[in-house]
Length: 478
Image (cartoon, rainbow, N blue to C red):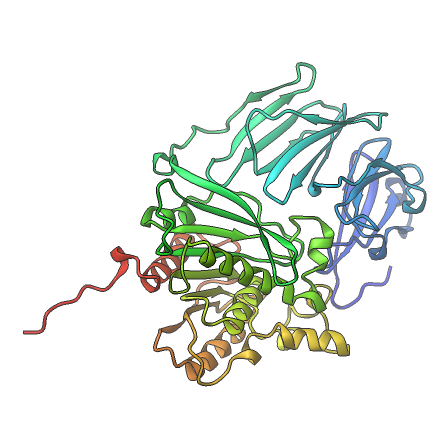
């Protein structure tokens, strides 16, 4: 097989199907895969055969001794599940196992085969997760009643010789709970791996799941969290956290550190902007390359909604996103600097037209585009926050961060954005640039490093949105 310079190769033995699988990776979520029977190992050279091609839009695969099961979004915005015989795998002749749902998107990361059949997860608007099961040698899809409402589900199995399935459930304000599913008895049995932590400070939190019209009328899911009794008078400091890339969904996840914002009388909000995968692959494609402006326009629409409905006001809104979320934050603050009090892009892509010239750039072309194609080059320019900074503009207070050892977003990207922002800004609000010389892209950071980063984010945001406990002390001059 020919391997392109921007592709990463990976091979493994799939023990259930007894196939050797070879993958060629970029950030393109559509699999480019090859296979060979394990018996090929006895030959001088493996006879790799094509398994999945990117144009077939296959995004995940599971297997047992009889079938390969795979998810695909080909002509199916919310995805479907197909199966093909292990003995003769062929996407062209694969049969439909689970059709597309009209209202729920398949979470293709949660596709697991056991002795009894196939388990999978669907979500509604990215925030309401449901568990489904298809028995072996059947095509009947059955929803399994969960013991609690769940925003996200994680599935773990032992192998296809066993019936064992463990399901971890969680949400915005509920910590992860682990259960073993008893198929024969049709019940979930709690099986925690450790003692359960208690968070009494979060017991009175309210969660609202809203649908907000964006600039083009598209309804965007918006998750809002706050303490019960928080006044609806436009004075609540509001932290909006978003991403919007690679089809990665902002799943409801219990994050005590971010929920600390609500303990200061604030509102925590998560706009599920286009570019993510909350509503399926069509949602991803609607915020990718030439459609990327939908990503930050969705965030702006959600912020406008919160202001219009008296949750908060422009002088109280902070926005945060990291990595590819830097495009979201950088372009939201440059398009509507009047709407936000604070912007915190962390290790963010802020100079998209130069991304391709960095070590990690070529692998990201499938998501953002290439400067070599006219329309994609124009799209890269449109999503470039650095290029949209205007001299003499009143910008929000901004904390820009970089990791000196970051292999994904080279430190000079956020550095040059911060420098130009400092020169252009006339609001009088602080523009700070922090480079961590001991950090990279955040992956693998120590617990202490994670606490330091979130402390900086929360303290800066609460300071600049006027939270009383975070204002500087004034000392009278004698």
